[in-house]
Image (cartoon, rainbow, N blue to C red; front, side, top):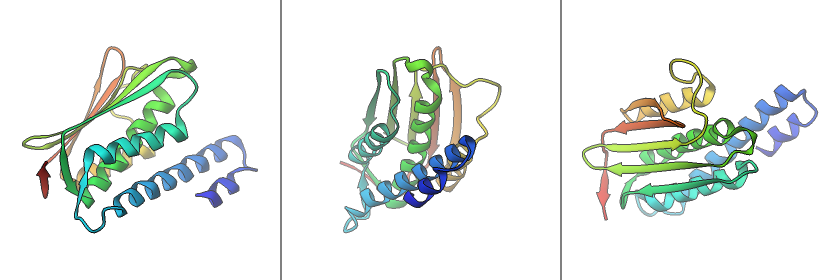
Length: 180
């Protein structure tokens, strides 16, 4: 991550921005993985604790100026490492998109991450920002990563425009999980 950022220092702005984004993705993925490794003796991950940590790290590294806050609401549930890693990376991409695009001009806002597990796993990331412009789902690299990880989970992906904001919901069948 540091070497990629160093490479971007002397580059033109578009290249520098792309390299910075790649470096941030690598860093957050490594942090997410390190967070999972702390419980390597267990095959299950405490999702409430884990998602709070993921979102806090994103806000520490990316939160723009302005009064943007976050809320993580999660059922007391443990998921397998593989499911937790996929959900962590999806959450990273969605929260990052909210911070980058939903609150221009330092406007205040709220990003909410919610994980519910009943019959299926439901992850929802929503913001009360400006929403997604255009028809259809976003098409950037982050969106492709989200779609691929959702497929890996055997799940579904739904983007919904809110007034104001955007909500993205991932539904997936449960794997090995345990309520606490």
